[in-house]
Length: 232
Image 1 (tube, one colour):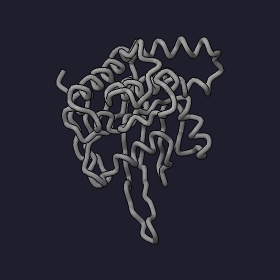
Image 2 (tube, one colour; image 1 turned 90 degrees about the vertical axis):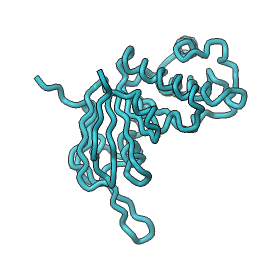
Image 3 (cartoon, rainbow, N blue to C red; image 1 turned 30 degrees about the vertical axis):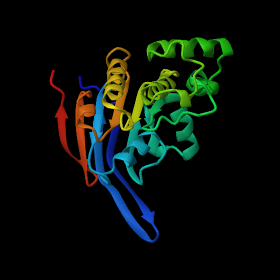
Image 4 (cartoon, helix red, strand yellow; image 1 turned 135 degrees about the vertical axis):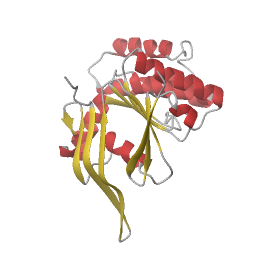
């Protein structure tokens, strides 16, 4: 029996208006990602990678077509409903970390938990587990300005998964890192996929980063033109 995809786009159309000009991005985009997959999305600038990620995150809505994640039709939700859904069902890892500079590592990681009915003690326990998971135990009081790029990205990953979402969206997660730090972040993402069964969609320009994924999809001019699967 074929399993229904966890993420499904069918006939998605999306464009923007800049001034008086209509800029089409997708005309009829289809995509199916099973639960537990790790997909890298590559393509030249302007191919639609950021637009795809924004739609998966519920930041943008399709102009037409259907977009489902799990049992939820994001294309049928309003902006407020998509925002609420995003806060409870996914984590996002950013290229430039997006940490709040006035908060220390533990406080940055704790932020998503403030939306949940948890006591302060329960939040501290979860944050402590995340710090252990990303190898930053003992650094909970450090501020972003005192941390390396790799350490900041680990905090960003911990923040993304502290609420235990099923889906991680990663926007160039190694784009601002040196090779060693990038490899450590990619190994962490692979661990989250293999051991914790997180579904991951990662936009990247880095072919080496893409090799960490189970498959790589290439976007060009708003269409998927190639798929490569990782060697078994």
